[in-house]
Length: 579
Image (tube, helix red, strand yellow):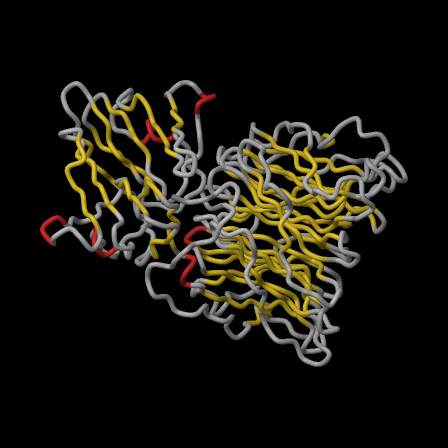
């Protein structure tokens, strides 16, 4: 079973199948098609079809505009650059932010001074066709002060479709910079009046807001100097970004004089998030992170990300996670007296990041800045950054694949798992388990475990095929992994459910790596209304069970790729879902 909330205290005893060494990042590919001017501040998202979409600020027209591009071949090439803003005349469109909705619509927000040279606002556009065309730009903020700056926006889209944009705002006066936000319930056609993310904060300064979504929740992280120096805080919205709960502090430095800066946040399987930031607790700037579960519980302590011992600066970080819970971080690193982009990952079940590596070796006078990282699938990552090796800043992309991260992690003891891949046929004997491990399959027709295979002991006649969309109980003799092959399906999946006349239990595992599905979605997937009466999850670390009862929202929980669930059905039917 996957450790998706707080990494366990121990590492894996063994990797149960031989793996290749991690692939080093490939040759960087230039994304922009203008080389004479600066392209900077790139950010990226996964658009529909697992294609990488990149947006940046671009000086090719003599001022700053917003440009974007898409790759359709895994990062080998990028499509012609397209301008996203529609500002006329000389003005600055900078600091872009982007998100994608569940139907594939690309959302963009940025900082814009088209109304007045000395007055920045927040603007928005969207694209229905993967960045080929954009809608007329719309102003998001509602400040009408003479000179009032709205800066550095962030954007997120909840599963239900609500779009939330947040930014830093100085309309309250000098020394009173606050984080404000607005939301749209009509796909970005209009936005609500803005509100302070945390109201009643006096004159404390707030900066550096970053948003992400996980299901219908919006998570906002930001810096607040309410204690006298800036520290990181987290606010959660459970209604898609309409309102936010009280903030929780993220760093564990207590009342020390250390500072934090440069927050970045990404969703995690199970409904939580991972947050990374720059931190001065060691006397220089290092990178730290924490994992926050869906219920608000945090890692026992902040996790050091970088591995620099030279007391040089690590700044400008970005964090991502994949569908299985591996965490990836990039940052600007000055250990060699010139900023280069470095990368490290935290494997599911581990408590320490692996040794960092350079993404691309810089030249003698090369400055690599503003990195962004995206995981397209477990172990496969894109890193985007700006690089001045050609004399002006350009935007580059590079990719790497870490084979041993595409895996299901098992803890010692019983695990309830499913295999979320297709195009590769598994048997109980070919999962790569250790001798003495047990694989058990449930028969919903007889309501018994009628398949049991002991690795290294059972005769071949006891072996059985591992079915799609089905859960299996696996006893692991040690912490270990099942390395995955194949790919994730993209077409709708169907499973015929047959139970006894009076109803019965079915083991369910979704053939999917989506992290935005919940137990409450399962009854909606069933062909007969009222056919699913209960969904139960199992935690192998504690042995505890959690039950969702349809209609009781308080019992709902997030579904995690690779985990399996018990589904109580009152009648036969068909389970249909989109991966």
